[in-house]
Image (cartoon, rainbow, N blue to C red):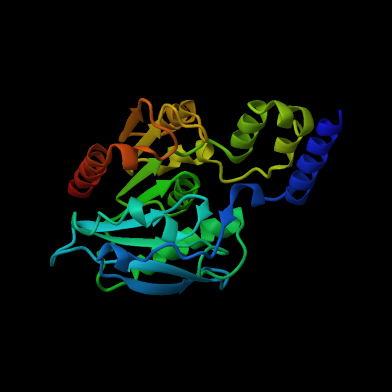
Length: 281
């Protein structure tokens, strides 16, 4: 009973500060893990402002060669900052693509404090930055959204219909309240102590409600069948709700975003093929 009491106190202390807010979804930090220079990449530190004045930081990685195939807007997952996500996109310049990867407010060198609405403003600001650059063809911009970055990508793209040529979604969930409910249901201690918590998660900008609005922009959904964070049936539901054209790649024996490290050649080939078809259409 004493151990159960300690667990209850710990769970309550963790959950109550999050009550009614989005902080449960975001784990930002300012730790510097590496830079594009560590991968022998040319890059530019870029700064731009969100609609509400928050100053954001990102890296622009120019494509190798004289004529880029297109520009990838990378919208990363919920932990750390861009210095911990560069491995997902550091290969794209050699494949002929410019890349902009940026930090949401509260992450890395970006100002402000993270929120769901704020992250959506930040993604829109990143897209606006690309569309105003003289070295970017504004008609050749594609998105690569990972995990919660995929959820943000869907909401942003639904608001910016016609401004993107293709959207790749990796390990994305269907809804904010739904993903919290999933984890609580599958943790016996949390199920007892925090069964009520999903009802405190605000509604709004859920991917399952917005994904159909992206058509006719091509969509690629990538998901591992052993994803322990966002279960793969969520990817299937997103795919079924999306309009054409769309592609789905479900990978056996792969956890959350694991395929980029376990099957790098195949995952890169599929992403490049998808972008190539979309940019030629």
